Image (cartoon, rainbow, N blue to C red):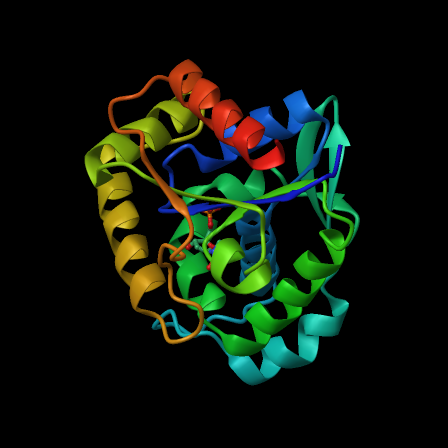
Amino acid sequence: MKKITIAIDGHSSCGKSTMAKELARKVGYVYVDTGAMYRAVTLYALRHNLFAADGAVLEVALREAMPQIDIDQRLVDGKTTTFLNGENVEREIRGLEVSNHVSPIAAIPFVRTALVAQQQKMGREGGIVMDGRDIGTTVFPNAELKIFVTASAEVRAQRRYDELQQKGMPADYADILKNVQERDYIDSHREVSPLRQADDALLLDNSHMTIDEQNVWLMEQFEKATK
Ligand code: DC
C-alpha cells in the first residue's frame, strides 16, 4: 500500500500529538512533533540569554546561532523524544518557561524557514504523521490527509493542567488558560504561516470527545484516504 503524508494541525493543547502518535504507531508511520522543534529552539535561546528583558528575541544573535542548533527526534522507550545538540530535553521543553517564550520564536521568519526545510526533508518519502500549525498549509500542502483539530480554550487549559499535574510539574489553571489564549492569538495573527485551517483539511472539534472516540474517527479518515 502507498505510504501517504498526514498533516495534523490545530490549536495548542487540543490533543493533536496524542492522536497523531497513536495513529503513527497503529499504521507503522514515523511521527514528527514540530511544536517540539520550535520549543527546542526556544530552550536554546533561553539558555543562551537571547531574550531581552521585555521578552523580545535578540534576533541577530539567534540567526548567528541557528547553524549550531541541532534538533533531533528519536524513540526512547517507545516514546518520541526530542534532543537538542544530543541532550534529551523532552521534559524541559514542556515546562511553562518554554511555553511562555515559544510564540515569539515561532514567529521569526528565519527560524520557520530552517525548521520547515528540516521537516520537508523528514517527510520526503511519505509514511509520516506530522503535527503542528502549518503542516497542511506550508510544509506539506499536497498531503493526502489533512486534519485541523480544535477544542474550546477552557477544555484545552484543563487538559494541559492535568498533564502537568500527572508529571508532578507545577501548574496553575488560570495561568495556563491565559497562556493558551495568548498563544492562540499570536499563532493565528503572526505574519508568517499564521495558524489557519487548510481549505482541504477535515475539521475535528474534540471538546466533547474521548481519546478513544477521536482515535476511531482518525483511523476511519486514514482508511478512506488510503483506499
Ligand atoms: O504544539 P506546541 O504547543 O508544542 O507548539 C509550540 C509552539 O510552536 C506554539 O506556540 C506554536 C508553534 N508552532 C508553530 O508555529 N508551527 C508549528 N508547526 C508547530 C508549532
